[in-house]
Length: 130
Image 1 (cartoon, rainbow, N blue to C red):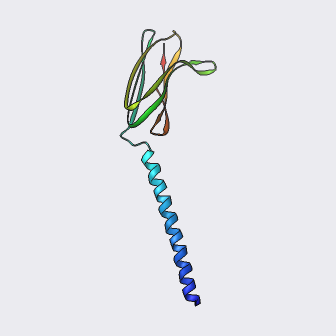
Image 2: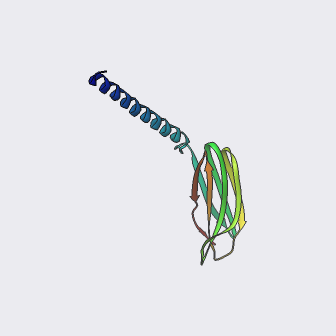
């Protein structure tokens, strides 16, 4: 074989390797993007009070399986501490309302941590002081 032919074969081989690597990398990126959160999915978390009662309202709208926990937390000298935990699981849509008797002079917040379609999300509500 002459040198030009060997050089041509080597160049074609290298070009094939580069194209194959780019195609594999592109397919991995597309697969990962399929799992990413899209703007049509929402998490809505609200905390309200009437007297000493706390009202937690959560809604999650998604195209995926949803599971996780809803936490009611009270602020103390040591930071935020859980006072109640409610498990969450469902497909596509979750609507949950909870009532808790709070303590006067305390500040509360709600926090939800969920896995939606393989991705983890945390949302924190507004704070409410009783």
